[in-house]
Every structure is written in structure tokens, then in C-alpha cells.
Image (cartoon, rainbow, N blue to C red; front, side, top):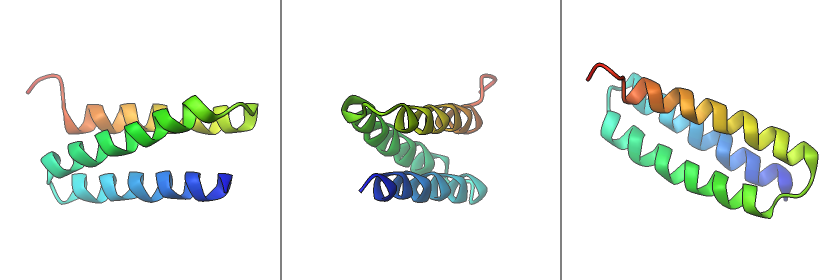
Length: 74
């Protein structure tokens, strides 16, 4: 089950990247919020260090994608 949850996150992140490449920033931002909510749910239920490390990697990646979608200068 653990693998399936992270696979869902991985697929969601790929979808965000694809939307950024397609310059559909509104949809990318909406998908990012959806994946962030799923990540928060996982964080609330995770107790194993291995899961927490994996979640932290996704948090960093989502923060980078957010910055790419919403640059400071705009």
C-alpha cells in the first residue's frame, strides 16, 4: 500500500510538470494544491522514518514547482 501512495504522488507531480511545459499554469497550480493536500494526509498518517524521508522529498519538489508556476516577479 505504501508504494501505491507514493506512485500516486509521483504521477501527480509528473502531471504538474507536463502542465507547466504546456504553459497551463492555472491547471498546474490546481493540481499542485491537490497533490499538496494528499501529501499532507500522508504526513499525518506516517510514522516510519523511511516514509517521512520520502514525503520530505516530495515537499521540496512541490515547493520548487510552486516557485516555477508562481515566480516572484509576476
